[in-house]
Image (tube, rainbow over all chains, first blue to last red; front, side):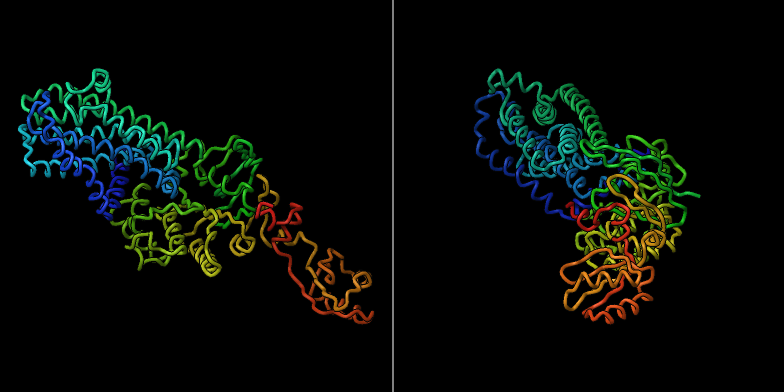
Length: 257
Length: 317
């Protein structure tokens, strides 16, 4: 109970700070919009290659962009922890009965909440561009859930790295190192059947691709909910694992004090 | 009743023996100072006492709770004002206070009232709803202290409370700390590397050097260990050797020669000895340019007990 209550207090603090500079939410949305609008237009003929399950490339792309955005956001989430470590905010809380777990968990929750808000905005823009989510409210929910889970899975990793290295430069290096490779080793931008064989098999182990698959499944015709369910469950399991790793890293940080 | 009991703390960081058997007691209601140069082990001692880190050996109890076995009981009884702030710069002063109160288990109207009261008490009420980024260094330090006090702790730890403040703000902070100690009937443990600060604030103090407590007592007791006041005589024409002989006849104990023309001696009572010293020098035809008497300072105490000069050690020389 204490963990949940304290996580709530800490998350409120972070959400409030984020809202105080709402320009960030807009700036963070520039990149996914460029992908959705410009990239989506540029490659609109690519569906002629076949295997996309739709002739509208933007319909194919939009749910994947939601997941990609959540993934990129997650790789940066450790920056906020480093900021708190640098300013000794964490240290001040450690000398109080504040739940240790809540200090890590609130960072992940904040990151996932941001991803959820951005998911809604991206989906609204996509709808304006003519994308139809035929599964309705349940479909929206599934896409937002995919965004939240992909985000929290990688936010856990980012938090762990932040706590272990405590350096912004390392965080940036790691974010760049895993960002594009995991994006290209997924079906975010292209149909699976158009990928080289080795990439197809690698993608099956890529958590970003799990999220893309789940989100896209509810948009394309002939939705198979079992695909959505299994991918979301896989992501949930992974999120639990990375959150556990982040918590362990937090203990390591405390021992080093 | 002892508010803090520390016995035989030892802690090693890789190559450095940060604590090498630290023991002291702090009585309830007193302001206790840990005085020492940078790197002496003051902050490490505080970090053990506020449960941020563990000692390798030794025991410590704060407000009756063992820091190792009952860390949460300790955390509820203490306020900790770390050396470098720890406030959330992107939140307002009030938001910082409210969050601190909540994790200390407070809520509702009681917490809101306490936050208002503290903002008044430390004098930042007008800035309460401004983001901390806009605060001056002094205001931020006041907020730090308010954060440490929100849950009405019994013991407050102030780690270098005035480092980084300008001299004026520092004097203001001294008045503040004394007033708070009174108003909140607190036990305060403060660390400082300012000798004046320890002298001004502490009821009792311990001098820490190289991970050990060198000596403990009230500032007056520590100074009484010295052999009295320093008399500094600057001669107008040199004649150092003759002057030394003459001073010896007046009962002043020679201590040092500074530069070309200045003699430092110790006498039990500087004011009373001065007429005799000046008369004797005058009778011998030795001209005196200036003369100064100084009460023993904590600088002298440090030198006396550790054999090292405080200022150069503080700079890490």
